[in-house]
Image 1: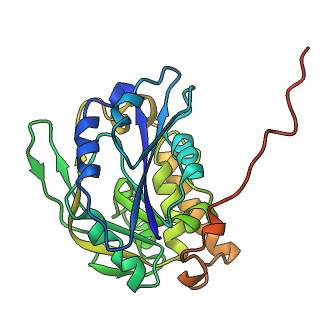
Image 2 (image 1 turned 120 degrees about the vertical axis):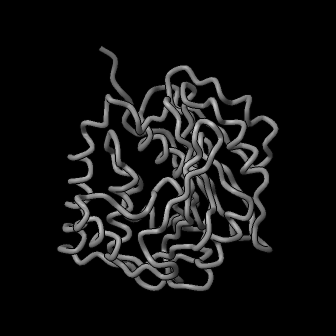
Image 3 (image 1 turned 90 degrees about the vertical axis):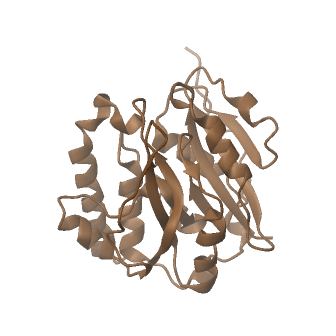
Length: 272
């Protein structure tokens, strides 16, 4: 049966809204025949969130046991994912009812490798702030989001925290990029340059605004220029290399692409 995997990189100091995120996942409906898997990967040397998922039947929780950052944490979650599609969801955001019902069908009907729904900002007082989509709805041609970003100072018209992606395509371009910030933009820039996507009309998720957001951290915000510069450099690199994917059919429902066996590391550290 086809599976959609939600990947959430969780972090205890910013998990105050986790209960609402969990409730939003549990309320999701799926197209007929689909199965939901929720991969939760907790970052930090003192994990403390496992009990939140004890009664969530679709959740598969694991902790890093060390502070690695959001890119590495998401990639470790991706290594455990068995789904054909991957839905990104941060531990403070909310999927609205019907989100997966809206996002999955375009992958079955179109030659696409990513899709995204619209997001409202969810403010601390509970109010929602609407945003008009910068792109037309429907098929988004390969490269068009990056042309938009190039003409807008390296700012993208797609919010990457709400992306749904073809899992094999995501792995093929290396997963999330090892940057201190904008790791999702650097990933998406490469993928969207060589594949078509789909901009779903309608609000499918809520992007929570609050003081403890990692994206508000002064520790990494000053690095954003270089992070977004690398994203645009990746765009030029994949174009120069002539990277491309063939028909989406090469990725469809082939579980051999997800299931691999890995044993202990052959080279163990020596004692001194």
